[in-house]
Image 1 (tube, helix red, strand yellow):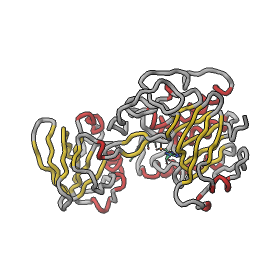
Image 2 (cartoon, rainbow, N blue to C red):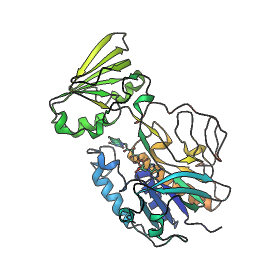
Image 3 (cartoon, helix red, strand yellow):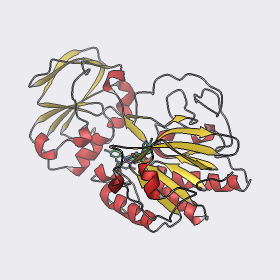
Length: 360
Ligand SMILES: Cc1cc2nc3c(=O)[nH]c(=O)nc-3n(C[C@H](O)[C@H](O)[C@H](O)COP(=O)(O)OP(=O)(O)OC[C@H]3O[C@@H](n4cnc5c(N)ncnc54)[C@H](O)[C@@H]3O)c2cc1C
């Protein structure tokens, strides 16, 4: 059958972008679908990076990746398009794509490294279409993770209906010299501490015992008060913010702060259809349909890093390349039990809601 391209890539973070350049390096055309209005949106919000070779902050890395994709002729980037469904068949995959935001916002589409029409589809026609189905022999799914819903977090109460902003959105000037209640000990806390040593903020960090390992990088920071809790119940919406806690030592305390922020972690939310998930909601590469390759943060709670995202994206594209030539690799070739998938893929088992841990 006629296919739109050699490889579909869903998600334009470091994993998806690495998949695109790797695919190009072995002669594969690709279409990369990104729901945001720019590539690597997550990286643009990381002010300080110290575990990636060659860069010290997220915006510089995002700009470098965007430039690389701009030079990557065999890859067509479609921004502002959300993949809503992925179906996998014996001989091809189909990705259903919807425009994000108002229909007809063609001006918001920026084709980076556009190689012209792929199959029968002009970029402009694609931009206007609703529910477009794209076909290819293989798909790389690299949709990352999204913030956990506070109402799904068992140790936290009183959050329903409250507008609690995520910590990574905190305006440094607004939290300087204030006491801030941080709900959860996920990675953004370390990033804020590293990026803003000048802040005189006092951070009161309430977190469940299973997240204790995440506090290691901030444990010595004198601005942090760490409170391991079995339960935290937010008080009424008022100033100051109050919260009743039951600590892991069994003590009952009232925490008081000027402001409160969510920092609970994240969970994957891949498009519906053929992407297989394990019991915790993650999507391990070795458990997918042979035509579906997963890369980046959505693979695992423990390997959520920029460098591992890029490595796994490149590996996913190589997996598709070798598969297209009938050369087996471990990636995408094995199956495991305990997975959930709507179509195709290994055995079906309804998983629990995603584990409320994230950030690796
Ligand atoms: C505050 C913070 C600080 C961090 N600091 C560091 C650090 O210092 N070092 C480090 O190594 N890591 C850090 N990380 C983690 C790092 O950002 C991630 O590991 C990395 O971005 C994962 O890349 P990814 O491509 O898997 O996912 P993402 O970067 O999340 O990219 C996924 C992309 O997929 C798109 N998408 C999602 N769903 C769809 C869909 N249905 N259709 C189309 N597109 C879709 C999203 O818009 C997004 O652009 C930090 C994360 C945060 C939040």
